[in-house]
Amino acid sequence: MKNPNFLTFSLAVLLLLAFLSNCSNKPEPDYYKNLFTGDILDKLEFQEFRDSLYAMEFDSIEGEKMVNLNFKKQTNSNGSIIQPFNYSIRVGMEYLVREHSYDKLGLTIPKRTFSTIDGDSIKIGGNQAKPTLINLWFVGCTGCVQEMPELNRIKSKYGDQVNFVSMTFDEKPKVLKFLSRTDFRFIHIVNVEEYIKQIGSSPYPENIFINKKGNIEFIEGGVFGEKVEYFESLLDKLIK
Image (cartoon, rainbow, N blue to C red; front, top):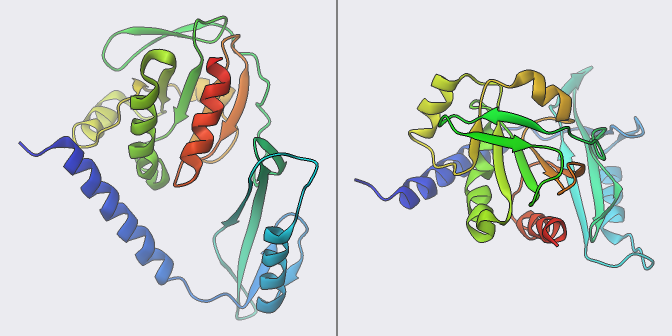
């Protein structure tokens, strides 16, 4: 029997290669559209704008600055390829600009009991002895699958200090088939589309950090690369 860690690593490599292949097949944009302002920028203007984001300084806020450009699906207008984009700017744990609107931040979640895919039960919301990280995903979401190895590593680090829960609108048979070939070590709750609509805010994948009082304190997209350390800092804050 093959080592599960080897299978996880192999899957991650294949997904990365597929992602790079898709990126390399994208045509070079003629123009860029800032989704925050509606401005259309040529290549030089976009480069200058991008450089200005990285050059911005915020002396009054402590922490490392992170800039994330988010490119949307390209469009075609009068024969020109236009690349829409938005971006996030974060200094330390404070966002100055966010690429998505997370309207569920601060939401109080009433306590509710769910059945897990294994037939156990778990309470989410209300006063809890430990915080909860809910990962929203679905089987056909490439980004969701790509972040699973990082989520597994975070869970291994924090163990039972945090409730690590995944939620999906997918049905149980579909999820069981997926989990039979993919290592994802969260507690799984399936077929809860209506509940996801109550707590979810943005495109998948989405990670919702709930404090011990049952309030949504942080919401993040996928966890990749340097963002692992940031996720861990959020969990450290919630555990204290």
